[in-house]
View: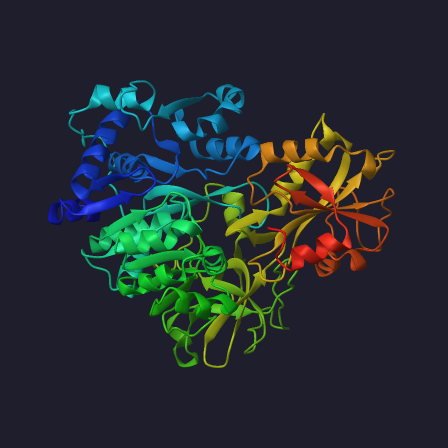
Length: 588
């Protein structure tokens, strides 16, 4: 019997998921009934080994992948922000090796798929629409209706081992388009077990989740945590500052999930301090990651929450850290006297690309206390907690493995993150290594953004090259995207149609990945020493990051433009606008 089936048997009538966005409630029993129907529907589709799911956060989404899992079909949880080339790539990556290739898309997101339907069709990928309105009997709903009441045939279904794939979660990685990270049953279960034990969750708890269920924080920790504890998920499909406190208070939520950006929004945007304070009457734990030190104490006091549990981890990685001590700013703790128990290390590296600094013996050098280091996790294939299953792309998997770190022949997962540890063992976030940065709670791949700038036709055809990187804005989490754009010979910055450029980029990139700033040389750029200005070579990003969006540091030889979402264009910056951005008067 599976963990899910055991939970359904023990607490069938407990609420499993309450969706505040559409006022629907699923008990464990009703969720299981839908998942059984999905299992029967999938068995009617021969050769369906992997199915891509593009749906907003809702109970039906979880029921779909639960049903797929029961009959040995892997679900690919597609990021709902993906569009254009990135969306096609994600779906193709998931279902490319299946005998039959299919994606189930919710009616709310059908527009995203319609824009690339021709490309999907050329790849032999069938689109099935899931309608929340059950009166519509087409697409996936028709399959559900035709197979309703049909028992699931377990004959011929491969035995579900703990190390078999449950679903794929997409991550931007360090370069390139989104990669599908393999999540097996054991990894999903351990995530939920950790969550439920740290939060001391039980059947009477209500977990508030306004995080997307295609990500590991909501889709793994939250969902698996609820299943392990028999708790209820109170779901808000999209985070809302104005609804946060009323959601927590009205629904008597005891545990709240967060990411750092949400916490900052809540602190800065809330207009109901008296209601905020009431949240702590029932909410005893906030569990999440990315809480800025300057926000932490203010957030905890504002919402009267006694315990903040901060964790660090990547979807695919084996280096998970937890700080359940309420030490402000720490993302984890490994006491110096217990380091031998948990094989995670910070080692010296080149901060631009993560290359390890090695000694004369060829081994890596461990970072000293308070010295930034590359976070690595030891890989042991015979230990389920130390495995690194990687991605569906084998080449991408190998790029995340480094060898001969502490001893000859050892293998470690390279996180791509810079952390520092104090003398006791509390660990603190420093930065991302190389080309990936975080903005709006999402990892942004500079390679993916740069690719969106180059196209035949339209304003992008006037662009010769672009160097994408992240810059800091005071008081904001992560880094805002900036593109240094080299125009083709004869094209002047003043002749560009920035409204059209905005529209072209918006069709290819999710909002969090679209550059907030553009930096354009006023004349054809001449390569600086050691820096190439064409797409053939890599760019140096360090000096550009340091200059940020300062008009003084950028100088008069280049123009700066700001992304104005209200006007849907890029507008030329002046000193007054720069000051307003820094003071938070212009929303970013």
